[in-house]
Length: 187
Ligand code: SF4
Image (tube, rainbow, N blue to C red; front, side, top):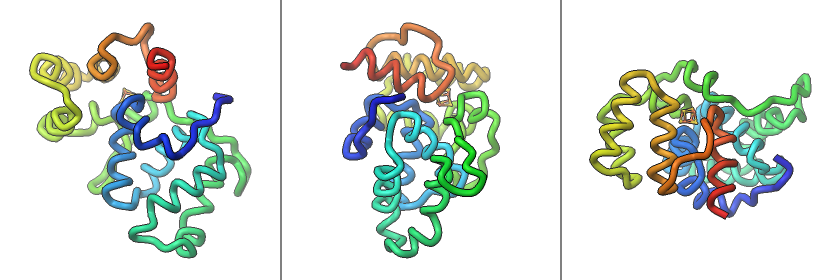
C-alpha cells in the first residue's frame, strides 16, 4: 500500500478493520506490553503492509512495550528486529506481510498469540473471544463450525460479515487484503 496509516489510529482500526489474527495480536500486545518474536513478526509485517512507516513502527512498538521495557532496553533488544522487517538490517531482505496460508500453517506455542485464531484457538477460547467482540448466537455457531471443519477462510469471511454488516465482495486470502476490503467499504 502507498497510503500511510497513522499509528494513533491503530487501536480503533484493530476493532473495525483488522482480521481476527491481527486483532488478537494487537490486543495481546496492549494487554501484556510484550509479544514474542513470531507474533512481532506476523503483526509487524502486517503493519508495514497497511502503510505504517518504519519511523512510526519504531514509535508504536517502543510505546507498546514501555510498561515492561524502558526505551534504551527496547532499542537494544527489539529495535533491530523492527528495522529488519523494513529491510534496513542484516541482508536487507524486503520481507512481505504473511498471507493466510503461512499464518494458518505456523506453529504456536503457549504464551504466543500469532497464527490464525480459527485454526489455533480451542473452541471455548475462540467462543469467548468472539463473544467479547460482539458476535452472537447463530453467527457464533456458524463460525465455530467452520473453524472445526478446517474452513478457516469461511470462518474469517463470516467474521468479516458480522463486523461490517455485509459480506466482503471477494474471497480474502491475506490479512492485508482483509484490511484493504474493510477500509474500502468503511470509507
Ligand atoms: Fe487472519 Fe487469514 Fe486467519 Fe483470517 S483466515 S484470521 S486473515 S490468518
